[in-house]
Image 1: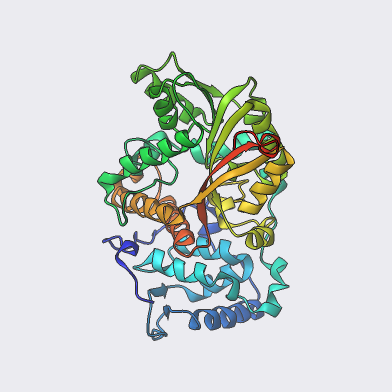
Image 2 (image 1 turned 30 degrees about the vertical axis):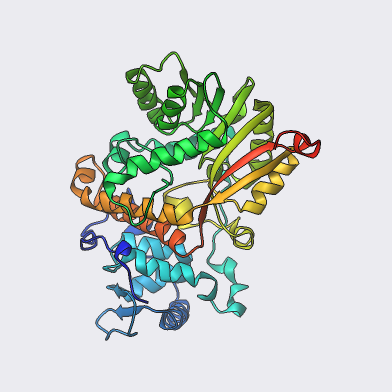
Length: 430
């Protein structure tokens, strides 16, 4: 596999941490114990799987195997195989956090793996998935209290942290570019293009009563207020709410925008339009019906609901929906990416229909590339905020892991318009 320019950061990988704080990172500080037989079997299966991929692999001091593709350097093969044999992909990510393996082309290597994900484990052994694929902990369910805890763990890390790698709009979702590849200087304009397209989809204009579920740092609410809309925006993040309110006041829109610390299930009132950007991924499968019933309850007759959602193929969603992954453990607890089919079925159950559906996953890969490059360039500033080397490797892995998912086509991002199903059936506005 020949790697293309967007995969390269122009910098070497972050240096492996020389010391891991065992109190902060207990599962990274030491590889799990595993029987010699299990480790040997894992070594056999992983080496065989890697040999079938367009990757070059260096295990310890052994010669490099493979003739094409990015080079995966495993510095501590024993720990690497013990982690994977015990915890699967969670162990693979923790091994990177511990500095036990690296590569000069992280996205390229992860893209190869994501492109062949279903073939990495021999089919007969896939039945033994439960031996290493852990089930999601009950405590991460998105009950009202659980959702607050889950959101707090990611979005309340530090506004200053996010500001280091996001563009000046502080928009933490996929942009929509005029052309790709794009330069950093084009990102803010691309974020506005995405937001404006969603607001157009929802029919937001002068006098629109708009509800936004998931405030972020307020850029969509500001764009809607500039159109003359009156906006109620709800969030569970105290950090985001504080900064969003400050930005709204600074822009002179405090009379048009209200930012409330509120669960979507607690929202009241009737609104002409509802917009929600990449929030459904945090809802959880158990609560998807409640989410769509809430959307239906909150929108006025004839109103429009515009969603932006990350999606994955339906069969992959069903196969992994109860699995506890590295992303759940370290980045987004309680989340689940839906399929388009799941969205359509849950929407239909609430009396809504998907009237428009447009995907642009390649644009998310480009957005993530720009964030990742910016984050790597800001490593010293991230450290100055109090985040250690393990955290920095974790976030580099998270951004690269996500980018690879979109580059491989394993993930997509879509803008969807939901309308009243009964109105459409009656021949009314569509």
